[in-house]
Length: 269
Image (cartoon, rainbow, N blue to C red; front, side, top):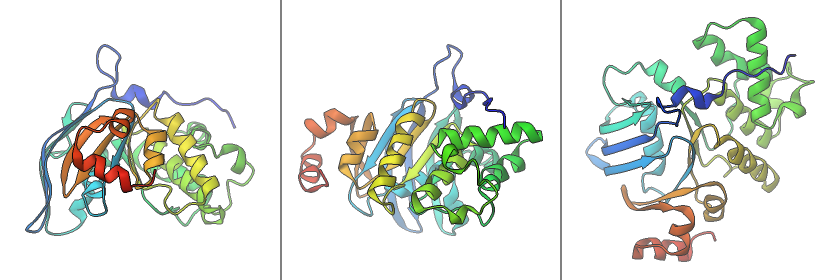
């Protein structure tokens, strides 16, 4: 198989001066029925790098992620207002093509969810669905994605085996490979290591460290040490509100807000 990779995903969301366009959140509100879950969020993220979302359970971190690709619309009674701009376009615009949006915004969940098909097809399936691509180019894309996910050397001789035959950590990296194969602008990780053993956690964190040079990564984590290791900036949330948003080292070493300081004192440091 040829190792030629497609164009860098970072090229899909650059401005005219060649710099990655930022992700901008303005006046974002979210409701579960009558419950006001997210309240007036205003955030601006750099076009690449990793942002960690931390805060107590139920504070709205995962809800926030699910607005980016509008997956919440699969459930009745849920509603978002405001704007999230990716590549300059408001994803909450009612005219947004949801299939295109979910190609642009990739998401990996807490527990690995490989498709019931081969390792190769796990990565190729979505690409084949959304892009017209030749057989060799598809094979190259699969290899590129698995290589980026740090999995190629482990599976290159068993691509026809089912994805479910892999270990839990390998399955999670397969899900990441499947997601980045579509070359998204934003990669959302919702507690991607909480169900993994320490060795697999280390592998996924190393993967995040590499991928954040090409993608905008937003990661939800309850592990404060992990937030410090993988992110350049951190958002601390409580009860659907942003309490503090700062460079990661600054937020952890010298938080401005009393609520941030109190949370970090009892967190997993």
